[in-house]
Length: 350
Image (tube, rainbow, N blue to C red; front, side):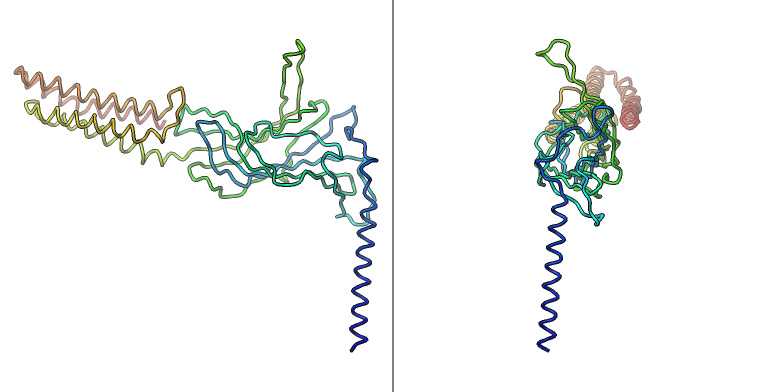
C-alpha cells in the first residue's frame, strides 16, 4: 500500500514538473518587449484593419436635461500584427503584454463624460499574431437629444470611438459582429432600448494655431436606438389635464342666470389647473424650446381660460336680459370645445 502511495505521489510530482516546463517553454516563445517595434502592422501602403466590438451590459439612466446617459459596456479591439507571431504547438496559446508595450490604434471613447475603466490595459496575442484588447467601462456618455417630440420621442444613444493618432488612410475601423451585442433586459424602465446601428466616418478637426490645417481622424460610431415609453406621461399628465378641462366645460350646462355657480366653477377650475401645473413641473425637461407636451399643456390652459371667458360673457348677457342668446352660446360651446380637444389629441398622437 505504501509503495502505491509513493508511486502516485511521484506521478503527481512528474506531472507538475512537466506542466511547469511546458508553461516555461510557452513563455519563452513570446517575444520580449525590447524586440517589439511599435509601428503600423500593415505598413504605409494600406490601412491597418481594426475590428471594434461593443457589448452593452446595461443602460441605467437617461438624463434629458444634461444630454447624457449612464451605461455599462465592454469594448473590444482586434487587429493582426505579424511581428508578434510566435511558434506554438497549442493553438489556444497566447502571450500577454501591456497595452503601451505594443502597437495599438490609440482608440478612445470620444463622447465620454465620466467613464471608469474596470480592467487592466493589457493585450492578448495569439500565435498567428491576432491581437485582442478588452476593456469594460462604467459611467456617463454625452448625447445630443432632440426633445421636440417629447414624450413621444426616439433618441440615439451613441458610443463614439475615435483614434487620436491615425486617419482613415492609416486605420480602417469596422464592426466585429462576434463581439457585439446586448444584455436583456436593461435596468432602465422608462425606455425601450433597441438594437444598435454601426457607422464608420471621418472626424475632421481644424487647428486654430496652424492656419488652414485640418486633421482627419478615423471614428467609429455605434448608435443605440431608444424610444421613450409614453404611458407614464399619459397617466401622470395627459389624463389629469384632460379631466380638468372636462370639468371647466361644465359651465356650458349651467343656466346663465346662475352667475355665482358659473363663475365659482370656472374660477375653481383655473386654480386647480395652476396647482396641477406646479405639481408636474419636475416631470418636464427644463429646456429652452417647447416640446410636444408643452404644446398640449399650453393648449389645455387656453381651453380652460376660454371656458372661463365664455362663462363671464354668458353671465353678463344673462344680467342684461339676453338669456336666450347666452343659452345658444352655451349650446354651441358644448360641441366647439370638444372638437378643439379632439384636434389637439390628433396632433399629439399623429
